[in-house]
Image 1 (cartoon, rainbow, N blue to C red):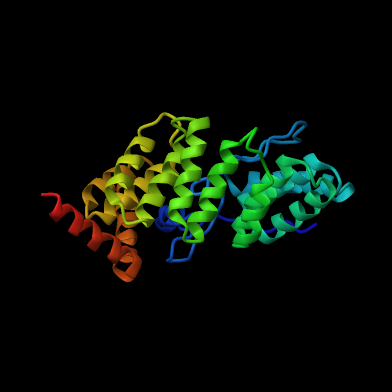
Image 2 (cartoon, rainbow, N blue to C red):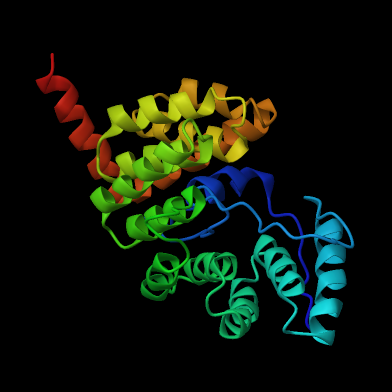
Amino acid sequence: MFIPRVGPGPVRMAGVCLVLSVSFALGGCKSMNDVTGSVRLPGASAKPSTMGSDPGSMRAYAESWGQRYDKDPSDKTAAMNYAAALRRMTQYSQATAVLQRAAAKHPNDMEVLGAYGKALADSQRLREAAEVLSRAHTPERPNWSILSAQGSVADQMGNHAGAQDFYRAALKINPEEPTVLSNLGLSFALSKDLRNADATLSRAAALPGADMRVRQNYALVLALQGKFTEAETVSRQDLDAAQAAANVGAIRLMIAQSDTWRDIRKLDGKQARSSR
């Protein structure tokens, strides 16, 4: 068993990593950990510990479940929780390997297939992820989290219209779920529809269940519209004043260096002028 070292990254870039969780055309940080893509960690009984958000807690959780997994790789609970910890520590290839083995042993288990598909997406194996996720639920019993993950994969593959259909289907099952609304808002931004992106992310950020990722995605879309003061105000809900300013500064730099974001802003500006 290999337990990777994990440590906190620079706070200044944390928000940028979070807002890039769809792996926009910019590349960089990628994660399927629920916005975009936003996947709840798989539930399981008999946890030997609770996984906290700090590096030490994550490592201890991974050690505990990894030892149980080593004793019996066919143990679904151990595989799911060990892989969940690995994904939280961004050890995507290792998590994918654990879940690939679990899927081979439990080929019809939709919970395993769902986790495996999300891990494949983390590893940027998008076509494989799309195929596996399509088998992780059925039309008769759709799963909103899987639908949201399918939308995230579709967005990363450039199919934004298809992604938005997945998100809307997820919202029919779980209305007002902030992570899905956040994904939908980011998809609108990728589609160069900043007005709908703003409205959707504003709605998501106002919901009681919204977390830092949702709010930082909203800050990104505000910044894309040149609303840097508003973006900084939103960032300050989770960061101190200096960190929020640095975060928005990093987004400014990202926008300046990316043709994708410049094009989005130019198109949105033309739309705004034409509607006056």
